[in-house]
Image (cartoon, rainbow, N blue to C red; front, side, top):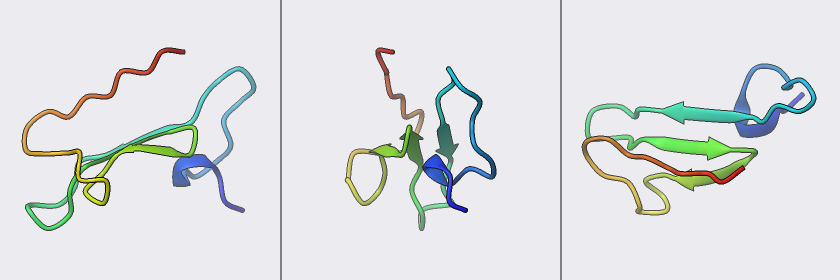
Length: 58
């Protein structure tokens, strides 16, 4: 089965799924996913070197 953001198991009720990946050298950029929505990634061209932060109003 496929779970939100590609995580290994489903989240319990009243919890949300998220995944943060740091990338690999300068080949693969970082990625931030929340509830199956990719907020930041190299494909979206909205990430860079250093700390990348996404603020989510829950």
